[in-house]
Image (cartoon, rainbow, N blue to C red):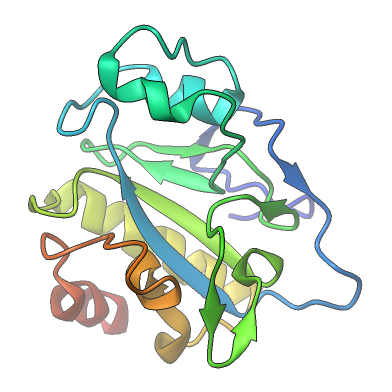
Length: 181
């Protein structure tokens, strides 16, 4: 279900300008799970799409002021209802991790895929999100065998002290059990 160009057939495709090529010879070996809501705790609006597309009106809400001129993307977003949006081909380098390191290797954007769950790091995620995440993860593991269970992490794991997502609302045990089934 991931085509030759790196697009997930189950996703709504929305182009982001915030990506570039992965370094030559750099294999995809890490999956990073994030969370996002704009404004925080508000779901279902267009702000996430606008942020990742580079057209967010940063005057539309006071909390958006810090996002002015920010160039950020994720490969995919999973909405509260389980709908999957894809902003960057999995073959390309999305700009989701920032300053980061995993197992002593810096620049996680180079070798990772970033998936955002619509939510906050303090609230529970939906069953529909877990189902969609498990389905997408299984497809990614099929295409990128370097993404083992041990190489699925939260943003907090690769940027400790700087990031806390997906947070206490994410049930890692439940997700990994569903993935194993």
